[in-house]
Length: 240
Image (cartoon, rainbow, N blue to C red; front, side, top):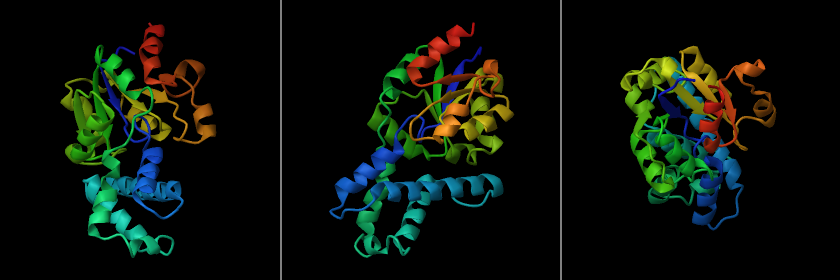
């Protein structure tokens, strides 16, 4: 683990998208709805579309645009059309900006400040640049730089993303570690030569998947497994 830079998945790994978006929706609307289900459906549309674009090269590379397209489709669907009848353009634009205001996990800000003392720290996210910058200001995330699918020309798991980040950091992939709460993200990163750090988050991956992730020393497939960003430096030092 002789790494010089850590690149972070953001949605779910650094910030609690599910809890924050559902809270903003509830606070901004008088109707009582299953806002968690709304947030999850919105996010599922994003996940599907980013993978499709990564594979085909077709589709927008601006996640704000993508989120708005998905939102409009949801508000036209049978499940949510009653909301669509009342949400005008201003309301839809306001709700779309919820993704810019995501709260960090309890360890995120403190952990990143500690890691920044020793490593280059950067996003490696499908989010667009303005979204990631606004989120960093909101949640006090001290990135050294922001790598975005919008800048790198594709979404994860396209190799343009992982290898592009290493290229712009002037580092070989082996000196960059991907930090994520999603084992699929780490498998892709490892296939392109990056080191891998799995962070267990309560809402990301299934409980079975989280329990099954093991380090290479334990016969698994990732380099480190931690429960907090504050555990990363001790875990790396423990490997030396």
